[in-house]
Length: 235
Image 1: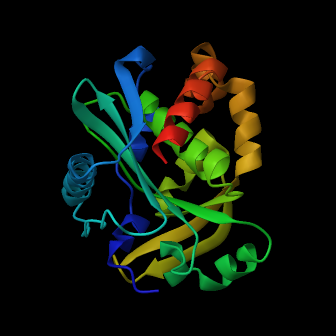
Image 2: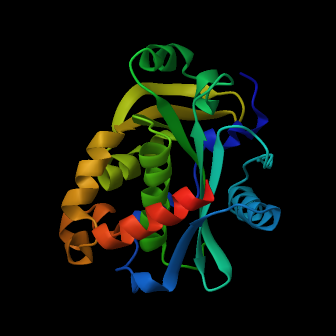
Image 3: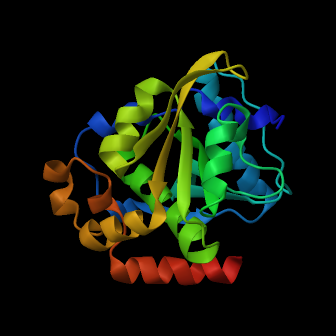
């Protein structure tokens, strides 16, 4: 698959943030799925700015592209984080270009999705923003679209983030991604497993330090129910 947007497969912005200081009050941050063109462009602008700061090429995604959901977290009116969910379909996933055989085998067993285009503003506390983005992406991919497995194509140095903070596993070792001329590995996380992690730790910010995980900063049950209702109304 030729996909000029696959620059996200290289180093993702803000992943060093899991070493950041304790998170601020979570109420500062509002999470939502972007519906209109203005919000979509704001998300793409944040991605372009953060990736550009790391010397990465990035081509804006078309809003009308099938199987894409652009998510964001706001602090007031400022967009401080964004993440895109790409559902598997006839066009495949961005990671197919580098890991085609692995994804072909996975498709025979389950419905796939891809989390990509992660960007967090460098001027904000990143942990709560990341937690809200990943929780919202989980709700869209698993609870709404019924995906069963997330795949992440990431730079090898970011694999500890996905392993420690989300409990993800390595699927395929390092290969060169020609789109960015950088190494990449393929990681995954079963979404039913993520659901159990959220049920166990979500909304328990007091556990964040000892758990060394993002899940305690995810929404609690009541907040999750409300957000899922809002997302379903917007689909």
